[in-house]
Length: 235
Ligand SMILES: C[S@@+](CC[C@H](N)C(=O)[O-])C[C@H]1O[C@@H](n2cnc3c(N)ncnc32)[C@H](O)[C@@H]1O
View 1 (cartoon, rainbow, N blue to C red):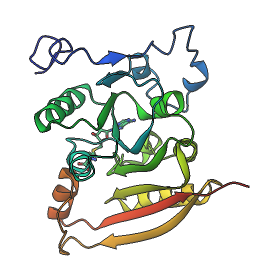
View 2 (tube, helix red, strand yellow):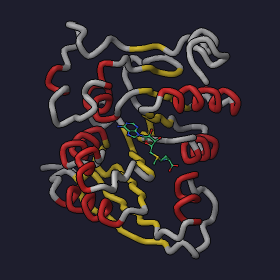
View 3 (tube, protein in one colour):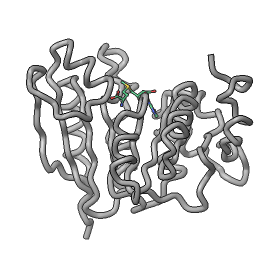
View 4 (spheres, rainbow, N blue to C red):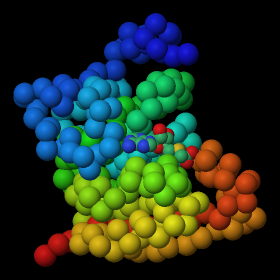
């Protein structure tokens, strides 16, 4: 169990730093804590940064929900000249990610622990990203739970705002009806347009780079769907 008293504690890690809570009067965030965000109670948690909150956030790629970091670390290793940021809601996962960044000696990775639905609107500036990547967002397959799904029209608009014009949004999932829903939401977002949509059968060879979730779902016989969208320049 990792926590503040383990070797992965804040102290041991050089104290990942946090921003003021959303209720801090210096940073009013009331407008973000609406009922549209079902995790508003979790949002009262501090947002943690590793290695530290940047003065002005900017990155080549932002990954949301990196899990154990397969994609993040592969890309950060391949492109040492680019900054890769990731927002992970799970605190244990976040501390494990920090440990893995340190073990790999990656100096081009920023990790953020928080709910992306709150972190993105509050902390990611306009046109600060070349790419947003979301691989296998939690599917919430039960009908009564679909309101938990991350990729709503409102959130997609926020992601579009953070991308430079022409910047890409990559989404991958094995849940067909969620992919259809996302494609519909993208189509309804004035600042995004779908560039491509493709599917890979589970028996088709992947040339490396599959995340843990993709490996597990492919082994279970699921077809993997990929959506690529771009931010359009609004005139
Ligand atoms: C199904 S897992 C996929 C993990 C990884 N991308 C993969 O393909 O193996 C979904 C990930 O998204 C994270 N997540 C879910 N909701 C989130 C949110 N609102 N903000 C940030 N991360 C979130 C989960 O903690 C988990 O790591």
